[in-house]
Every structure is written in C-alpha cells, then in structure tokens.
Length: 433
Image 1 (cartoon, rainbow, N blue to C red):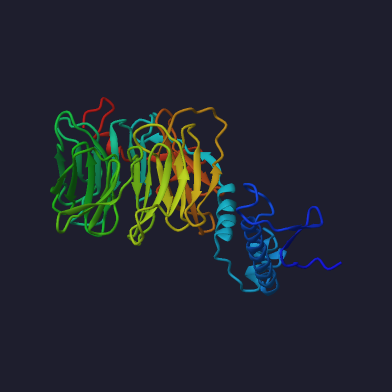
Image 2: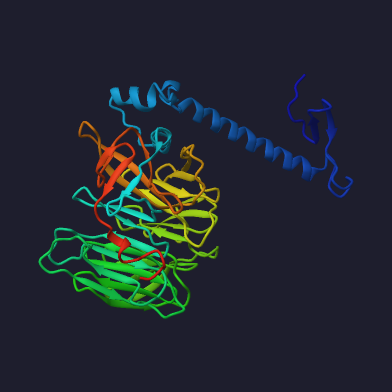
C-alpha cells in the first residue's frame, strides 16, 4: 500500500491509518489532525531528515583517531615520542603533570642551629649560595628575601614583619655574618600603630620591593634603601605581586593594577566574591595572574576579557592562602582547609590531587611553600617543593628521590648545619622587630 501523502488526508504512523485533515475553525483545540498541527509536524520531520543527512555525511568524512594513541603507556610518553609526534593537548599535559605529582615523596630534613646545636620552630628557610641557609623563627614574619650576596649596591637580605612596632617592621641590610667592607642596616616603620603589613614581592630587575598593608601599598628601592612610592588604599590588600617590571597587582575584592612609573592605577578584573587571599604571577610573561579567595583559585589573562581563563574549587582557611607555582611545569600547590597540599595544572585546567602526607602525626599548618632547584648525586637537576610547619622543627620536602637541595649542606639525611642565625637576630620570638 502506498503510504505517501494523499491530498486532504494525513497518515498517522502510530495508528497506521489515514485521517482527514480538519480545518482549524472546525477541529477542537489541540486536535492532532488539525491543519496547524499537521503542518508543524511536517516541518519538524523535514528538519530531522536534513539533520540526519548532515550527521551521516559528517561521520563519513571524519578521520577517527586510533585507540592506541589514547593509551597512557603506549602513547602518552613512548609511542608518540618515538614517531616524532609531540602531543601538546591538555590531555597530554594532564597525564604528564599527574605522573610527576604522583611520584613526589615526602621527606623531612632536621635543621640544627649553628650557635648552640638546639632546635627551634622554623617559620621560613631561605637557601644561600655559599651552602648555608637563612632561618626565620618569628611568627610575626611576613616575608624574608635573600636578595644578593655578591652585589656592592644591593642588600643581602630584606625582612618584613606584620605589626608596626619599634624599631621597625621593614629591614633592608646585610645578614649578620656577611663579610663586606661597608655593612648596611636600615630599619623602617611602615604604617600606623593600628595597621599591619600582609605581604611583599621582590622585583630584582628593577631592584624594587612591593609591600601590601592595611591602608597602603609601599614600594621600596633596595639600592637606595628607602621607600620611594606609596599608594593609599580604601580596603586592605592581603597580597601583592609584580605583573611585570613596572606594574604591581593587588586588591581586596577586585584585582587592581598600579603602574609605578606614572602612579596610575585601575581596576582590571572585577570580582564580586569573597576577599582576595592570594595573588601571584605564575610566569615571567607578565600577562597572567593567579588569584585566590577562600573558595576558589582563578587564572586571569590581561590580554583577554574580565572573566577568568581557568577556575579551580579550592577551600582554605585564614586570611591568606599558602600557595606557590612552578613556572616551568605550571603546577600550582596550595594548602587546603584540611591542611593537605593540593595540586592543580594550569596547562590542562584540572586538579591533580593531594600530595602524600608524612606518617609522623604532625598537625601544624604548612607555610611558605617554595619550589627549589636541586642537584642530584650524579649532577642532574631535580625539583623540590619545600614547606615549613610553624610548630615543628624541620622544614618539609616533597621530592622525586634522595637529593641534596641547593642551599643546604647535608652531613646525613637528618642533619643540616646552619651557620647563620640570619633573621633570628632581627625578629626574636617575642615579636619585637
């Protein structure tokens, strides 16, 4: 039987019968065989046929990727490398970054005070080029920067403490045992008695230090040894970073930029979320910013619009996020609300999981996460993530194998001799700066 269209009739595929098409003014409301419903169904049927033909043609012309290329062992790092096919997709980055993070192993290195052999809680550890390490033991510490040990114009170290106390909360000078012809030591008091400093960022190319506080952003010239710029804030900025050689990024809710050459500042990325708890430039290109609050990590690009390029869910406690970025690998490590160190890949935009925790039962919060270049036993370069715990003696390392981190002298696996008291003399444990 011919099931084509008969003028004036409609074929119902469900009932397999022909029905006479009724005029709209005669048919009841929403009648299936009314003229308007019949025309609408015919148009929809025509659209479905066109879309089916388009998909079928597209499927015939599509070259499907071999399944072996998706295999993590046969393709990710072996087969494609042998045939000269370099995978630069996000999936490839994700596999390599995940493999790197999975191989990091926790380890502790005990620090011994060179003055008396006793141990103390460590707030920050900075390696020195002569095989020693500068140690900070003050809980009032904001930042400790080892600037230069060989320059005749730059200081050896810069230290910033939080509270505005006498004799000062900014120290620019030489470390205690530095052997120089002319020793320098400058102490400054930044802010009022009821204000505090939150963070600082070093710009060695311009010999500048940016410091964020409750009411101001300060720019210190290290060669001159004095504060040369000051920007008043309506709201406090808990972190600050250099976007490039001349531009400082800061903010309370919104991300703002300040050009220190012209003293012009503007809001670049409006964020109506929680207050900013951290801001860093993840690389040296001077175009991207990694911004955090208590619930998210967001990556912004100054060449793009005002929306973040990538966003990670990351909950943490406290007014500041303890995090760092490995510039080469583009891996973010950040302490979460459970005191676990979570990792994220900026290249693939995916979380990589938490690092392994030691089995010694330490509960203190991690602080001052820092990636260090290290030299292995055979002279190869390796990467180490260092973290300090405020209530524990040793700094903490995640590493791929047993290595000797640059800046430490290891006599054994559990002994590091520190010959300099460094910041201990500047910021004693009673909080006096």
